[in-house]
Length: 443
Image (cartoon, rainbow, N blue to C red; front, top):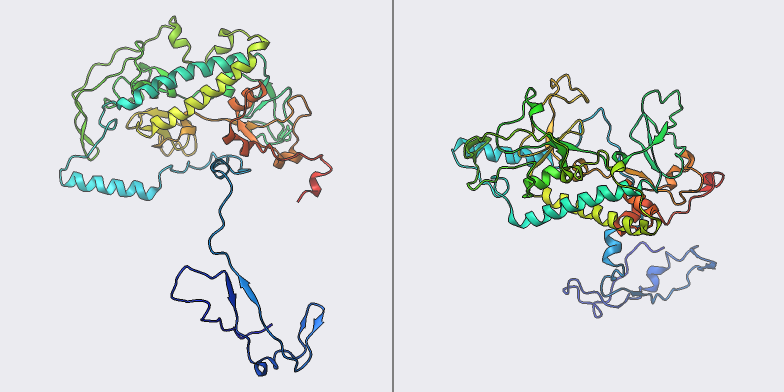
């Protein structure tokens, strides 16, 4: 090939016009004397260039005048064909911060500067204790969807079998348990990492994440000795209460004057108010519907003609709860322990010393509070997706061909509900699972 560049005709293209390329560019023909040194013994395809024979170069270069338009839709761009399965975080390591540590340090330095200058910290609702009026209807919608979700899952569990491992947190939705060797529970080595399957319950599908109910989130912190003076309710319900939902059994203080702070010190909170005693009766049906405890026995099996409708309503309720919790957490502060599954709804965490995870001796059992994520308040609890629930169980040799989905989505899908588009990439519906003998031939 020629090593010297060919000159571009200046008559056909003006280099001063930036960003504009001609549709056809013609290169000047080089001199014959300049080509003689390059044509000796040069092969191009099946043709041989003879010595001294001139070559007439008249190459035409075509270029597009603009970038190609992407014909894919927005839905295809938002949801790719396949996505990676959710990672399993190691237990012997702290969870990553949802907010970058640099931004946390920068905000702390700014608060410290304001505190040194005795400047009040600017707080907007609900950071100052006041409600956000636009989020009150969303909180009521989330609470209603939470009741529908519990009822729907409890009814579907009479129809759809769910299995759970008695030694670890693995859950499987099918007629029998799978044969994937990924159990890391107690005595897993003696079982060669096979799971010990038992019949699952509603708490295996909807993971119960509870938090302390606070009458005044900006009041006194919960201490280790006073932890029994507060009720434990689902974290989703507590988030809705602090967002404006009124439940007579679980009252909450509604402020008129905002909370004022200088740095980390609260200078005005309207005084301490005596909190009411915890509500211990279980006779109210309104409170029973808010908890997953005993939900399987409260609701009878549905008729076969209503299974598809219940599955569709349960799927819609699951999406509403997840959407609403994500929207409420953008404004209302929720803290989570960086080592265990403890969650606290409020501006700061409690002082209960019940953390027993990684290096809890160094912290005297105290929790390592950080900002919570949606999956920590309302876990998705991903399970293996089964394309044929009545077929053979999944095998560990073919696990790279299997997909995953949230447990609620998998239960509703097997009951007849339509799969939302955003879950299809992780479920890997377009992948054909090969036979065990063909798996080693797949690249």
